[in-house]
Length: 419
Image 1 (cartoon, helix red, strand yellow):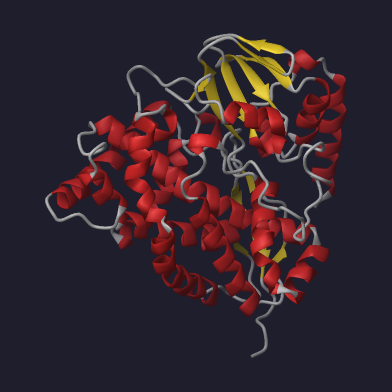
Image 2: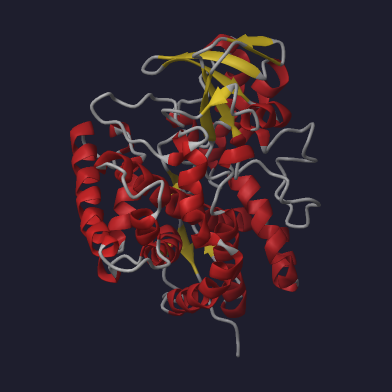
């Protein structure tokens, strides 16, 4: 970590504890781009765990920052609805994208049930050798001794290959999935898009492409891919174009962004904690626990939003009907009262899967086992090949308070294992 980065973090800590509480705005994307979010959430957990802030663009929102309060919200879908939006911004009336993660029962349950067979234990067992073969090829093709961007060469490539398989998507066009995933959650300030009009245009290209695949699959017998499942599913086969696009974005972002950012996060965390890297090399049986610890440490989706359906008391605050409520998983995963030494990256942590990153209740991440499987496989293959992977500079992080991820991580692999 360079001196400039340390100076930025020191200044952030001073500011986080010196400004009035009401001026703390946890949803500021700059805090995530600069990795300066931590002291703000630390202070909120201590002093104002259910915190009301006002965003210049999105209006007032509540931030729930402690583990048990987040659980209380996440497991009470009657009082805290997902309907409409799972992010801080409301959907535009002229560009509304229904998706099952932003629905309440019974429609949510029916649509989720339609796609959940893709991540059944049987299907994951069939996917494992495919993922392993691809991970091996990706790693074998890396240049030894030359600096490269781990995000692009490994994290994006592996997760995009897996996503293309789940959709039975044309292989040569698979990087379109990466682009649509980035565009779907981008703001103009992120540098990914130049305007909201461009974002919409690219997402319309996405749904037009997938409509052609839908037309092929709906005319053929049902198969074990996501598009066929949607085209033939009783609760999804009559979706209109925008609802189809909404569910596509959910599946693309959920299947791509989150896992790729945790893969990158694992490289960064192990470099920042060389004692843990040494433990992992000495005992590869720690990989599954390391995977869970990294998912907690990274928290690839920083929050999920709910909307109060009634007045609710939470930790001494009254949340009014209609209020926006942000469950900050990234903060709950560092809650000192529930997780021992939460700021320490510890691959031998007891109950490492006791994290919030996948959510809880009816909206718990449907693909959590697939995410863990990809991470387990890539690390088994890494340890079989490379004695070390060196991070050579600061990561460049995504400008977003929702997707907590990376655009660039420079690394060098000095040598391969001796056979």
